[in-house]
Length: 229
Ligand SMILES: O=C[C@H](O)COP(=O)(O)O
Image (cartoon, rainbow, N blue to C red; front, side, top):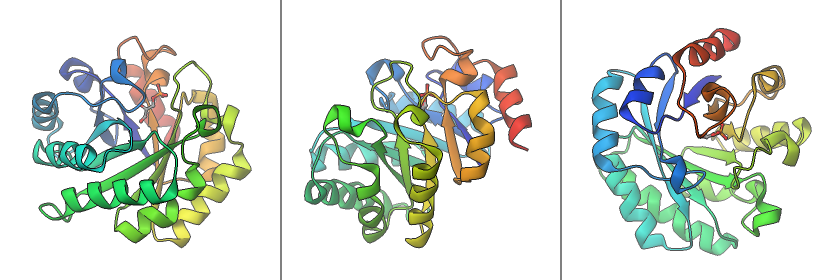
C-alpha cells in the first residue's frame, strides 16, 4: 500500500518527500482543488524520482474544461492526474472520464489517470463510488478513488464501513484497476486500511497534525510511512 501525501506548496512538498507519491493540491479550492501549473512544475523538480500527482479539481459536468485541465497537469509533469466527479449521472461521468483519459493518454500513455468519486455522495447528490469502476475501466483510466467531498472533519469511515471499502477495492481489482482511498484518514485507521488493502491511501489532515488547514509536517509523514511498512 503506497502513501500519497497532498502538499499545497513547494515548502510543504519538501516536508512530504518521504511519502511514496507527492500529490499537488490547493485545499482552499476544494477537496481535490487544483494548484497552479508552475507549482506542479517546481514540485516535480524537487521530487526527483518520486512520482508526482496533481489534483485537477472537484469537477462539474464540463468534459472540455476537465480534459484541458488534465492535459495541463500532464504537461506540467504530473505522473498521476486526479479528477474529482462532483456531479451525478453515469452517462455524464462516462463522458468526463473518457475526455480526461484521452487528454492525458494521447501524449502520455504511461501516466496514471485517477478518477475520484466521493464517499459522502449521498449528501452532495453526486455519483456513487460504486458506479465509477466500470466507467474508469472502459475509458482506459487506471485508478478508481474515493475521497470525502466536504472536508468538515468527517472521515471516509463515517460514510463507508470496512466491508463497503473492501467491496469497492475488490470490484476495482476485477476490472483490472487500482484503488485509492482518502478522506480525513487518521493514524488509528491504518490497521483497517491495511486489511482493506487498496493500492494507495491519500492523506493530508493526518500529516498536518489533524487540521488540513495547517502545514504538512515531515515527522508525521515519516511516522505514517513507518506504520505502513
Ligand atoms: O488525496 C487526499 C486528500 O488530500 C486527503 O485529504 P485529507 O486527509 O485532509 O482528507
